[in-house]
Length: 178
Image (cartoon, rainbow, N blue to C red; front, side, top):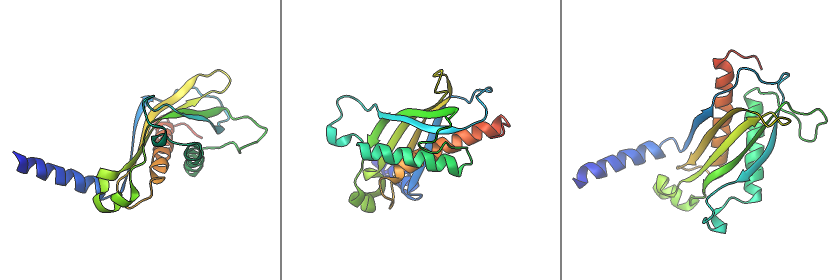
């Protein structure tokens, strides 16, 4: 009985640690067919909604939230989605809002030796919203995991990349021009 469990555990460990990073997502609201034009996206409020009993040192700080917002901006721009310049006078027609709903810093030193056991991870619930009406036009949960040699901040980038990729895929599925 223990040999198959050990074998399964070893296979899972190899699968999880070989790429070093994972990006996953679950769309909770597909992109609506009618969204405001011209499309210009900005990064709005990203908050923290981890469980209340989470210890203060295990919650993401303001610096990590700002880093995540920066990664969201960079990844959306890389995907070719028109982005409003921070502080620009022309308002965005859509805004990314959301919160970090799960956060695990992991241990970089241990990650070097045991991979997934010390993985860093972040789960973000993100929405694309019309700022004036509050209407949600796209939403989902996006996960970034770093189980290999990468720094923990890469988990934030993976979640942001997942959001940009899912949004771009939604545009392509609806044959929408950006």
